[in-house]
Image 1: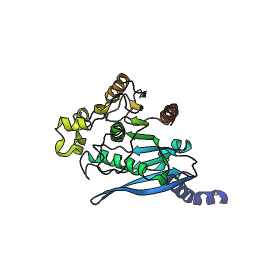
Image 2 (image 1 turned 60 degrees about the vertical axis):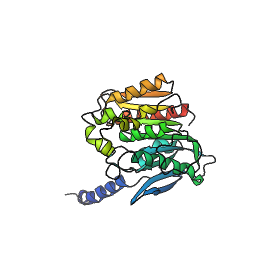
Image 3 (image 1 turned 90 degrees about the vertical axis):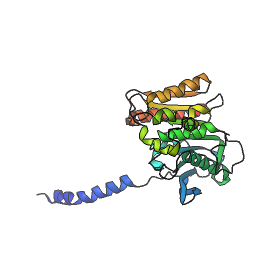
Image 4 (image 1 turned 135 degrees about the vertical axis):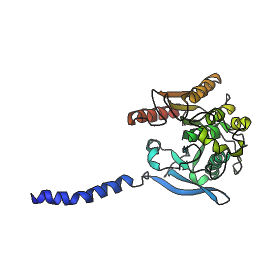
Length: 288
């Protein structure tokens, strides 16, 4: 056997290991300050943390994207910076947070945590966040929490650990296949298992409605971008249709991207690219 071929074969395992290590390497955006696992709240033994990425040497306050992960309010974590590359390219500060799951505390703890994270970021001037250009984004249960926290605006009912005293005005919400009617969702075949998030109030329709973004929608609701697949087996596509209908009726700027035969976030890379382009276009039209 050719000696060069033998050497190449012997080196293959080392190349494979190097490639595997490179693929799992943590992505951190360049020309950004990185605050990893930054504590923003403590309740008992639970500590809420976020990863925060802030542009360096910004000559003016920067827009903020606050991301809320999904997982049916029962699982999931803040993830990594890799999913926000398009926002880094546009110069956004980005925060992705952990919040209390059902095992830690029942509703409304999760939305309280999202509001607390928002207040924390707005309260600390060192992060140079523009309070007039704050965008909330999430998918599935994270989409629900982003909508609910965003639609609250200055309604303080979920601000249990918020010391921010100025008015809160959310510039936009990006909702990816999120839950808009909690009562309908927890009584669906796919959502019933997540009713645990409501704890002892799982059969209280008034409580469930209080946690539903649709209940807070009015003419002052932030502009909303919606993405949903028609074949979503987890969150019924109709949840987003109903949201858009109310947004239209109240004259709120919105855009809904329907993914034909799209499942629960399992879109193709081409579809995800197109979605991201439309999101950035939507935000630029708002001056964010």
